Image (cartoon, rainbow, N blue to C red; front, top):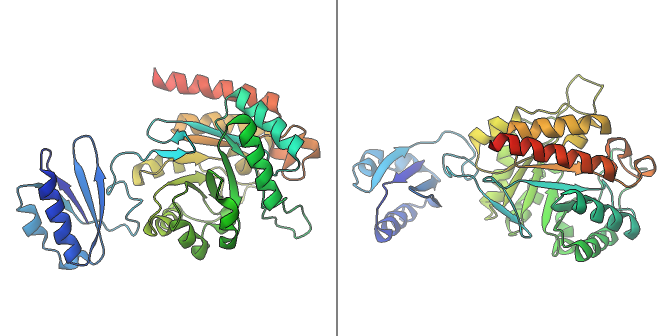
Amino acid sequence: MITVIRPGTKEEQIDSLIHWFREQGLDVHISKGEVHTVLGIIGDTAKVDTDLLEGLEMVEMVQRVSDPFKKANRKFHPEDSVIDCGGVKIGGGHFAIMAGPCSVESEEQITLVANEVKKAGATILRGGAFKPRTSPYDFQGLKAEGIELLLEAKKQTGMPIITEIMNANHLPLFEKVDVIQVGARNMQNFELLKELGRTNKPVLLKRGLANSLKELLMSAEYIMAGGNENIMLCERGIRTFETYTRNTLDLSAVPVLKELTHLPVIIDPSHATGKASLVPSMAVAAVAAGADGLMIEVHNDPKKALCDGAQSLTPAQFEKLAKRVEKIRTALED
């Protein structure tokens, strides 16, 4: 249930109403916009007398919310959330490009790519330290060493870093990581999501290969219910009958999510298509659709990459893409 407070209401009156809700055993999510204050009431609201609430002079509107996701719901939080990722803001008009190799392979590789993507316009360095692979015989990442190499690249470039977590037990290793990525395979690893809810780090939550947008939002709700509201959603392609591409990029997810939630939406065209030649087109299409950011895989020598070389751009290709993205963004502002 949401309660919209009239503009000009005194803080003491709002605090008194919040106290009343909490006395009923309800949780209150407070969202303060430029004009209105919205109170999101979470819990068993059946016992709340809406007629009584609407009769209060300070209350402009009361509305029951049937959606199972509450904290992630735009009705609870009408204005876009802006997530601070190590000094880089995403959402609410702030756009970011996360770029880097699928896997961290060596200090030379990650440092080279980090410098190249920063020069081309990327604002966050991505790189896999722990790699979930379909085959147990494929490269699984450098793990803790990979995180150390990412931190070294951060020290040299000043770029915040994002890397994927596989297990809640690994959280101590992510203490200096700026953004924690939850991969598609772990989108419904609820115990991991609960642990991330106890942190205050930004989390990039990727949509599962065969999950609905509602399920994605419910996974975000798991993290937010624990107290961490620094969540970004990522569409990285879903599994369909099409085999030409690695997955099918659901670009409609951008406007749909924008309607349903206040959380920023990121698009990963690299995993969605699986082919470097298709990444630029899907990236600019995502920007035109209203995405708050992109995640692009970039490798200095894709043919020799230990992971997902076929979908990785070279630094030169990434630079060209970054310029196209900037043109699209400029055109949308006109």
